[in-house]
Image 1 (cartoon, each protein chain N blue to C red):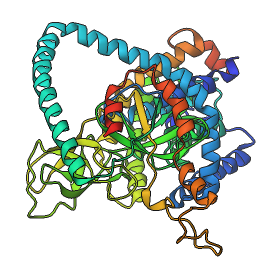
Image 2 (tube, rainbow over the protein chains, first blue to last red):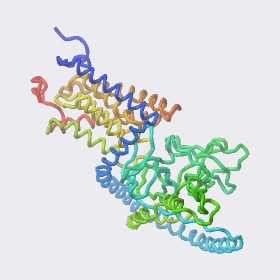
Image 3 (cartoon, rainbow over the protein chains, first blue to last red):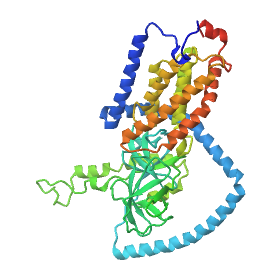
Image 4 (cartoon, rainbow over the protein chains, first blue to last red):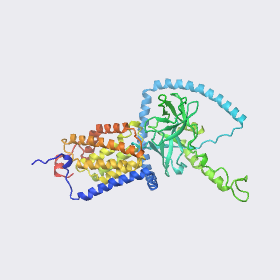
Length: 335
Length: 169
């Protein structure tokens, strides 16, 4: 007699079915528990993840090498295919840039003159380190990238990450040798920005798509497609003036198209910018003429201030950066 | 070595998932779904020993590498392993269409479930298009992946009849 039912239910059933199904149920339950713990951001989960990501980093770094080389070869092939058009375009761009160079030099002189008149204090230059993207995050939840710089290179959580085109994101996890960068277009990314020449304040929010939403833009604000968007620095986490992207869309539904190509990141630079508000600049009040009102700060206060900028570690990594041409990163950092 | 072949091949796919290929934003869901598809196929291929716990472990590794919430891809792989294990052994050509249909049904459910889970995780409706695009692409890729795994397993595009009916590899 022919057996009834589809092959879906005709699988041979081993005699140890009950323990297997119990195990399966246990695994489903474990997955649910892990999801809940991840959602509430349990510290043990985060620590375990950091440790495991550090362990997998060498594998990822080795595996990403052929992928990156393949991507470069493809890009190079595309470039060769359109070489003549590209040369023409670059010639025109070069002419335009020469004019800009001349104008910039004039403006630099003017700014320097005005600064000297105002006795303006020079802004400290930013130290940065450059590394490579070794892994991408795929899925509905996150848009992040893993870079081969970690705590041993001086990277902490919250540092801005840029490439030659503009802001890429910020570090959200820092292991010993790797760090995770939350990209601008991630659902959790919120960047306070200034829009256009008027410097209208807004919030660039990621929604996992290629473009960012421009939230909290005042109704009476004058913004136009093509306006430049840059960081305002008002959150105290990111430095002011980092290029983010340009405005696209129409009035009421403005979006920001990031300058950085977030889908094909390669070399990125981490800016060692610590929140100014968190740095202790005044010495503690103490008895004996060494307090806040004293002219001489305590050793402790000095240590706290300098420790926030890991110059030695950063400079060590800047040596690494020398291998990777990234003039845009330098320009951004100087800004 | 044959015993570890399924796990090793899926591990290779998990690592490939995390590698920066430079795919567009809409294509972010394709590679992880290929991992789930491989789990499903290995469970359906006769003699392809990939236990559910192994599938969940590999999914967990995908979660770790992707930086997403732990348990999400583990859950997807576990569902793939459960359904693949119950879908019946793949016979010489005759059951291919049925397996494909089961995968279409499964990936549709997984896409819907994944989208709901992601929306619940963030308390907002997330963009459904990358998930739908990934699901559609995985349906198109199913024959390639299945026959690829059959080739890896048997050195040819399909199991031998005697292997199936004797019930051993």
